Amino acid sequence: MKVLILYFSATENTAKMAKVIEGRFAEMGVEVTMSNMTSYTNRQEKIDLAPYDAVVFGAPVHARRAPKVVREWLRTLNGQGKKCSMFFTYGGFGVHPTHYSTREILEEQHFRVVSSAEFLGAHTFNLGGWRALGDRPNELDFKVAKDYVELTCKRFTGEDDRILGELEKTEYTEEQLDSAETSRFKVVTQLPTRGGEECSMCMACEELCPTPV
Ligand SMILES: Cc1cc2nc3c(=O)[nH]c(=O)nc-3n(C[C@H](O)[C@H](O)[C@H](O)COP(=O)(O)O)c2cc1C
Image (cartoon, rainbow, N blue to C red; front, side, top):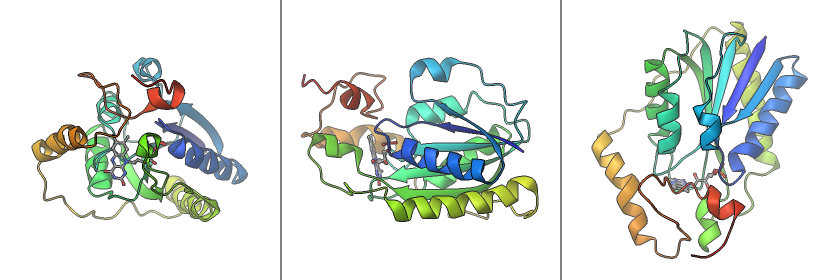
């Protein structure tokens, strides 16, 4: 079986989990390829899914959904009916409805979502002085990630023919979530932010080049 892992990670939490997930797939005899989709350039490249049996998507939670740039990029893919799985990292302030909304996008793009997972990670805003979950992900998270791979592998091969069950629907409209995505950060003044219309505040710039502006 050939599996492609595609992940977005501005401050490395999702990348750490992706590496553990990749390692466990490989240990299980799966031919696994991994691509980091964090940069704009990589997200512009056309991805050929034909060689792969299944895809794993990894992303952080930004304002209760996958980051805007990730959602936009997912909408450019054609899943061709392939099985996929999702995993997310988040800073302990709430995940819902990330699983639900990302699954909706993936299904619209013709993927079949068989499983999903979430892991705690140091909050990105720690870069601006927060102190939320600085020690995560840790060894216990890695263990859960390995269990997640084992379950997902069985669903990819069909040994377990279940797919991801029903998820709790969100009471928020897309408009409300869009508004939370932009407005809530205006009050978080201690953040290092470079702003701009297209900025999704993923903080990759702060991580890579932490010069105050
Ligand atoms: C713009 C932005 C919004 C975020 N919103 C949430 C959120 O709604 N809930 C939460 O628990 N964590 C939130 N976080 C924290 C990240 O989900 C968490 O730190 C994640 O592990 C970062 O992943 P990365 O290191 O791969 O970029 C947010 C981070 C950023 C930058």
